Image 1 (cartoon, rainbow, N blue to C red):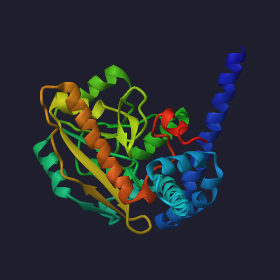
Image 2 (cartoon, one colour):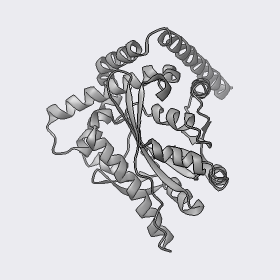
Image 3 (spheres, rainbow, N blue to C red):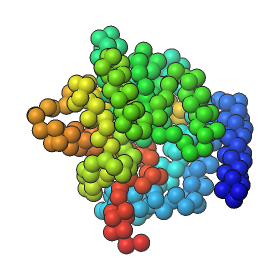
Image 4 (cartoon, helix red, strand yellow):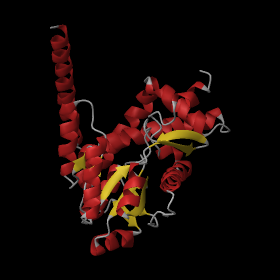
Length: 305
């Protein structure tokens, strides 16, 4: 009985959160996108540092940039909160942020065109850079077929709204979990479709590779799929130009080396992908998503706080 009451209370909370999401999204869609973006950035720049998540941001920046002055780390912290706020506010308006609207400049479009024209099975990957939704929108609207993987939101009502919102600009999501779903992703590549995945979140059952000089549990799934299906790897990145305008870059695609030592090949592939994310985060640390715990507990414990 107590468990049933607890489940009912949780469901009520989730429904309230879903309603709040609807109200916020509806309000933002009434605004010009640059206004909505600026407002979201201003709100989180002020209130983000007051949340409990700020401790994670501070610790992540200390781990990544140990020699950086505290003043500079605080500047990056405030700037990344503003970027995060802009991204959240832009999300309900993503159907207005596409190359067709003139808000996204695409560099390396020839790689995308080739993948579409030749139906090259491709694994598109990136990290949580700036408004990372831009990358999915551009890839899908260019004609790429296949699932984009994501981590489902705990609140099922908000999760449903997020999925529906992404469908407005052509993105179909696939919550990849477990062996069976990995098989589905492999089948997509065999059919000469493509998949998209974010690779920079902590993955407890992954492989441990250096990220900013400290070992981080990392998802080896994309690399294993690429090796098994002989798929092409396509790195992506996005940066904010001004307001709600962006530059998306398709970096040079590549195939993973197959030496015959599968374990070594997987580790090398995971490290290459991780190095790419680190390079982008070093280039524009203000636009990286520092709010999630990326390293294992031992790295955070070593900070001594």
